[in-house]
Amino acid sequence: MIPFSPPRMDQVTVDEVSKVLLSGWITTGPRTKLFEEKISEYVGCRKTICLNSATAGMELVLRWFGVKAGDEVIIPAYTYCATANVVLHCGAIPVMVDVDEKDFNISVAAIRSKITSKTKAIIPVDISGLPCDYDAINSLVRESSIQALFTPATDEQKTLGRIMVMADAAHSVGSSYKGKKQGSVTDVAVFSFHAVKNLTTAEGGAVCMNFPDRLDTDEIYKKLNTKSLHGQSKDALAKTQGNGSAWRYDVVEPGYKCNMMDIQAAIGLVELDRYDDNLNRRKDIFAHYTNAFSSHNWAILPTYLNDEKESSYHLYMIRIKGATEDQRDQIIQEIFAQEVAVNVHFQPLPLLTAYKNLGYKMEDYPEAFNKYANEISLPVYYDLNDEQLEQVSTAVINAVHKILG
Image (cartoon, rainbow, N blue to C red; front, side):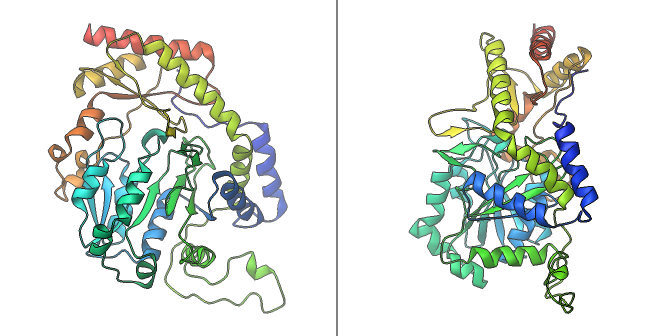
């Protein structure tokens, strides 16, 4: 069976993790701090904090910004549940909007229609690693009429003076928008380093910050770091440095426990060092699929490169023209029968029980459902060889022809 997305793990990774295990320091420490610096250098952002997940990163930022009960945060209906869950964790309301016709990303027109005086943040999601229309979104929150609606309730909100834009960039490490790396095009961008992502630390995430000068990014980093360690004023490394009273700390708020370990950072440093090599192989895989399917009129090929955007080549999301949801599922079964694992990204949130129970209805997001109903994600990973690529392509073509004729 050709797997869907195994991580790239080899002796280089093993050696670096072994060094950490034998170093006497395995939790948050020098490697985590180095990884944060290297990410900031790679994407061109002002400051990065690494955590145990992208989900934790998004929630900490919302809580730092003061998002609370009664507030609204605009998100796409087409995303993984983490995007909405963090809003609910803060007591706020996820205001879902539909996606654009041209790709899987959030519709800017739909965002505009849902902004109210309660809107505190927008979380666009780079589905499959393709950046959203960030110039339009950033311009929207700066329009005088939109800023006039904004009702700040915390010092952070008053200082920013507008709706915060936080990109859910879980898929899009290495993508670019108008020549700038994702991670440097919005107030905040949050990456995921989950096991199936292009760049993995097994589990993990990073918050990349690009706030305007009127906000002190170094101070925000300190506050997020404190929130990630139960509200403790010093991390474990800091308590080992200095004189005999360095152990003393305070807990300034009831925070969380979501820091990244040096074990994870060691994996991340290896992955980041060879990330461009990883991307180049993914580009070759995307090119193969596009070439294999472009002559078939049932194939709706994904957008991953144009004059403004370049994807991170995370997911190859092909759509089967004219297929119903049931037919798509039958096609997937036929592909699996040919020893190829594929996936679907994602079930729109209103299809999920938790969000149905909150009153969200799939019929309110027709474009999201139309795209989901006939989407299939194909294997993309560094060690996928050319022979396996041929097997995947052939399996998809055979399966579509068997089910659709």
